[in-house]
Amino acid sequence: MKHTFFITLLIILVVAGGIWFLPRTDQPITFDQATSTTQSAAPDTTDWQGYENEAFDFTFRYPDRVDTAVEAGRVKAQLIGPGSEPQTEVTGGFTLTIYTQSTDGLSIQEFATQEYEQQTQGLQGVSQPQRVTISDHTGHTFVVEGAMGSGIRYYILSAGSDEVYVATANISDPNEVGYVDTVRTILSTLEER
Image 1 (cartoon, one colour):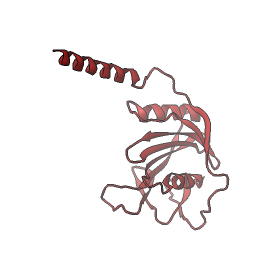
Image 2 (cartoon, one colour):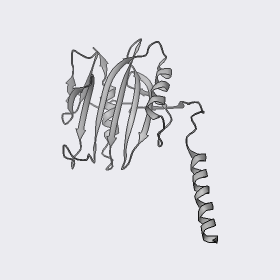
Image 3 (spheres, helix red, strand yellow):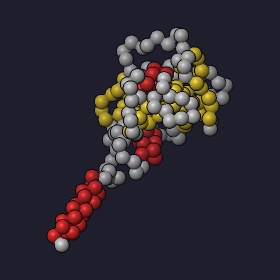
Image 4 (cartoon, one colour):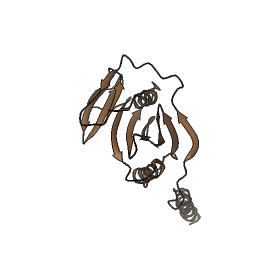
């Protein structure tokens, strides 16, 4: 009898504690004042390939090992790391998707807040949005953490007067090869056409 009582009490405490620590949706989203920036000296990308497509208002550079494609009106750049095979579970590499989107009159912070709310609703392991500067592009970034060193990084970057670059990078880097830096370097080469 005592044993059942303590197990029931323990279950109630665990459930109550879990509810207490769930993310609260009534709290305002705050942007970290810390700015995350790229290296002061930009990496040399002169031997990288150039991506240009008449359907898009931007160009960028990428390493030779990266495959590019257009899917659902967005540019996809993908690198499958060594030790990973196509059509199998990726244990290292990234998929970067880039497109431009109208802000519909919103400031870049308002747009980033809206994107953050849409992309993270009900998820745990989400970082607070941070201001970011990558090359000449300012904006905001946040991360949804995954397993085994993976995660999806969202970048909302200035593109023009009424547009932003929206980039999502699904990165798996369990061996710390530096895929986050590669993605940021690709983003640093974004230019309007």
